Length: 287
Image (cartoon, rainbow, N blue to C red):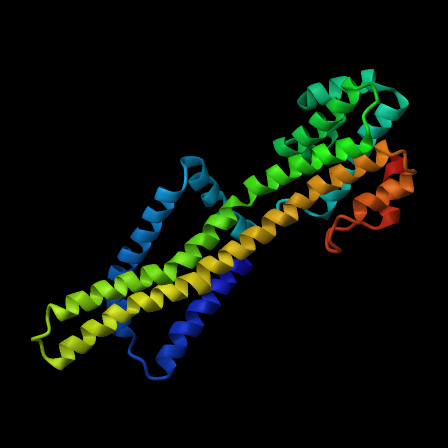
């Protein structure tokens, strides 16, 4: 919603301000389709050259994130704390044999199925199950610091892959001003080929050429650049749930008391998604 509002404000302020100050919008609108064909086509071509099919598909998903916003809300982070804490309690109280069926087949697990939104996130379930599988097969002899290092590497790899749509959008934003110049230069070349025309016609042709530069800069800093920034924000906001998993598992393997485990998980969240300590503690006692 905010992205749509921002786009409307941007267009109204730019073109409305131009009209209010006495500008003639006609030449701009006349040149717009041709300049957009050149700039937009060059931008799409550059993206195809520089990315794989999977990257292009992810880029489309990244654009969707700009309008959808973060997937996980406060309740999802609270549920994640309950889910991982319940699994760690099962490991501690009932032992690896009781935990193993849940991590080997999370889709059939009664624990995972209590939190269907989380169970649908394959990356999240894989992080939980793969890490706990290491603990199970090692019969509890793993060094918690080694587990933390493995999880850090996994989170780093996941983040590097997840943030690629934002990086590609930012790269496109950086290229658009230059592509606008390309369109403008082609317009100047066209104008020079009509140098024998009257000044009024030449002026209109030069104005059309300058629309290319204008569009390249506007698209870069007014749309695509902000899209890249928002995409990165959403990705990082959703990635916080992976750090919750890490904090609970590592703190539990260190043998910390439950209040400290809760605080370790809460401290990794922003204030907007951070549940109250009592809310988490009471919920865990109830479960």
